[in-house]
Image (tube, rainbow, N blue to C red; front, top):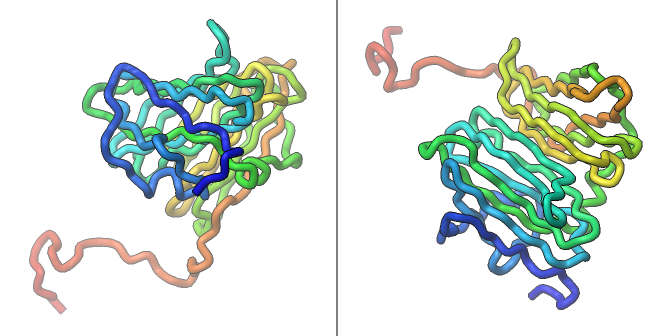
Length: 266
């Protein structure tokens, strides 16, 4: 059982009824503690869901989005007080099952509300899970080292096929943060795009974990702000597949139920 000193769980809300089924393989992958009443919620196309954290002890929340393999298109906003949106994100993912969305939002000086809106059509629902990040997970996301990206500039980070996921941390010296994070696999082939605005990049840095299955993955960080607003980007491997071997071939093509016949011609 949880100790009495833990913050209360988030309260999901919105225009649609929450899903009755819980997908345990969605949020606990990142080592989060599941909370009673804080379940995976289905967000239908065009609908909005909100999670309110009333406790001031919650200083960071984890946002997880996942689909059944269809494209994922969402708006995520952090509300603090009336008509105050200190952070917002626009997320697009080509395959929400192969590359689920996992980001962290700073929530100092509660109460705070996380709003997730599915801006896709009705045929493209996705599952959402928002919970408070534990102290170990929150501290592991901070890395003071990084590269300065001037306003209007971009920087790319290629990764080896053995890297399963990548950790991205973007901060500023206290100025507003406007950036676009892209995950490419092949020439101009965007698998995931995240556009972020933060009113204070020092008080609310942007943390995200990008799933990078397969080979040829490149993370591109673009500073979409003017020249007067530089940012610091730190991009490094988060999970590495230790069983990967460069000498092993990747087998493809038809199987025994192939195109012409299931009988070998050799």
